Length: 275
Ligand SMILES: [Zn+2]
Ligand SMILES: [Zn+2]
Image (tube, rainbow, N blue to C red):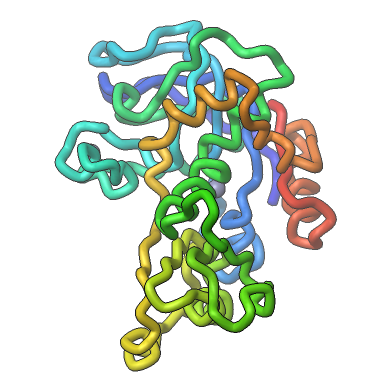
């Protein structure tokens, strides 16, 4: 991992926006390529979690304007096609992955559908919490939603099976993506319960017979973060939640390599990067 100068992104399509990044961060899923588990054949920009100030918009962009503070998902989406309309913007027919957000400036495609503006430019102390809505908080929210978490239900943290007296939890959130974590999540769920899985799978294979007799609901995948942005922005803006607490290391962007190292070595849970 290294920090280097690249060309400043520009508007390419009329539906693009250019964002001046206020804060970005390192994701747990960035560690798959960092550790060599996902092959990286050539130098590749990184980063898919972002928020910041709109600097410029293409001629077709009407929903946001320069000067506004915006948040978007790691999948740009038109928020308009049949899949978006039922709340699965991460399966948008026109989705594009935003993969170069660990930078001072980023180009966001499909800006009308992708970016959500906050009511005003936030104070500096609110930025970490707003940044989490771009992925980690929105993805966790989806895992809970997909696992059908309800007030009063038993929700398992994978690894805490004994707590349910052998019955299994109503809802289990699988947030790792390995064979072991998925198998444990399914086995920790009671008959009729739900698993919400958001860990990017690496070598996960499910046993059909075990699945057949488990009687569990399985729902997950790349989180449709865009679906939750308006609701979650409201919760952060009104001080109801403070998910920015997840960041236990803040570094300037040019020390990005140390941010990855600290997470890889588990010295940090999640690294916030300031351009
Ligand atoms: Zn992420
Ligand atoms: Zn769509």
